[in-house]
Image (cartoon, rainbow, N blue to C red):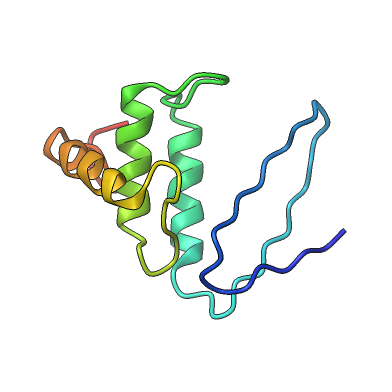
Length: 102
C-alpha cells in the first residue's frame, strides 16, 4: 500500500505490529536524506535508544541529528524549536556526528 505525502505536510509512520516491516521511502529531491538515515542507523545501533522509553541521551542524539538536517526533516512533536534547544545541549555535551557519543 503506497502513500504519498506532499512537501511540507507533517507526517510520521511506525510499525504497530510485531511483524518485520519493510518501508520504501522515495525523497525527491533526495538532498542529504541518505546521510540522515546513515546517522539514524548509527544512533539506533549504538544502544542509546531503548524500546518503549526515551532517555535523555536518545533525545539529545536525535535532536542533534534532526537539527543537522533541517533542510530534509523537521520535528513536529516535540516542536522543532524545542529540538533546537535539546540539540544545543547535546552538542555542548559531545553528542552528534563524528563525536564521542553515543
